[in-house]
Length: 170
Image: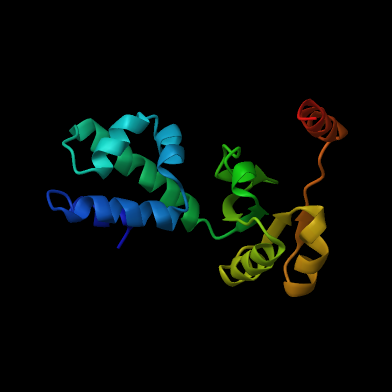
């Protein structure tokens, strides 16, 4: 059963918020990210999560966004991005088109080397076609998995911005 169907079936019961929480976890998305993507005010979603009354139009938007996320998950070709949550939060696209083919972007938040390696193995088991990660972990990831690994190369301007931030803290 699809996530939005489960959500609709739980309407009118106290299980609605529990089901909505479960779906957010399955989609690997925070309430704030869901708010940004759905254009439903965060305060409205907060009320929904606290069993307050909400409008039918809000429910329609929630279901629409969940359907969009599920459609992304139904794509056969997925590419994993392993990065810190702060970097993944900056991603605005859930799909990318290349050479006439659409790929779903699957996020794997990781903050340590160990988490990156676990995420790489999980991504391969989840059936992703390739992995994108930081250069510092790419060598280890390539040894663990049998799928292509691409490396994120940052611009020199990114390093200069970081140096300026560090200098401002001195």
